[in-house]
Image (cartoon, rainbow, N blue to C red; front, side):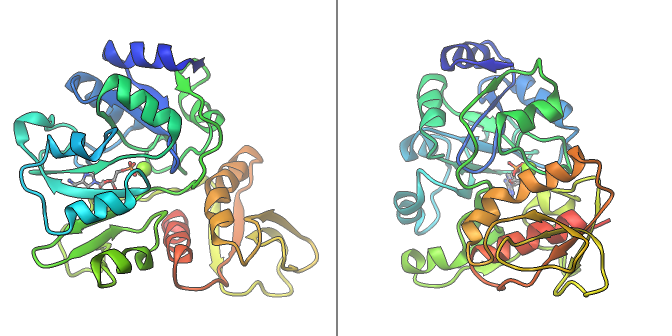
Length: 313
Ligand code: AMP
Ligand code: MG
């Protein structure tokens, strides 16, 4: 059910959960002042309680009110990338951020989104705690219709159109001597070089060296359609079936293409990815091949990682 901005404010201020747009993906939002509503987000999504949420705020100043200690380069990162698709993990004043939102950790994730409707909403409601508005493990929602597919047509959604980035935020965490990327996202690692003076390392965990990844969300199967995905560097000539690939390439005869756009346009591919994965489900597709012949840098890195997660069984 689509709601107006005014209705969205009222619902959030009375302690209810609704879906709201951002430039990355749609979020399932609750006011930071309602721990019970935050708890409801976990229940609605089927999200494990040890996977914390992101606090979204209207400004850097608002974020600063919750932070115990600002790591080096915090101001520089914030002024360069906020509002926008960067999330920072910061130590918090624990009484100010409900424990349920941060899974009991002494840190929380913060972001100032750039979508104009989200900013308008945040200015009215104050900080909103939200993860992506999809059932846990499923592809993220990049339109109001996607949210309704997962939560039903009666669920309240503030419709902000199709998400401009279509990919989650890039998450950075200060690790004592440097900032590290703990989740790849809409901003590629290279974007941070001019601001930090170094290319932040990518540490997604899961390499067997750590008991627990830095970003708990990395533990779980994610972004996955019902279809079994087979990731291929090239599609063999004799193969037939569904291919997730690029509109400027030719595939073996008998293949049915679900296009991510041009192979030269990672932004378009990022924008399309979740819509394509959801379309497979809508069409009842059981198996699909994925054309993985694209660079291992920039935004392509994020796409590669998402597809690897989505293909994991
Ligand atoms: P989502 O909004 O669904 O993309 O999920 C938010 C992501 O932020 C998850 O992958 C969480 O694991 C991560 N996250 C949130 N808070 C923290 C934190 N304090 N430390 C590390 N990762 C976090
Ligand atoms: Mg998510």
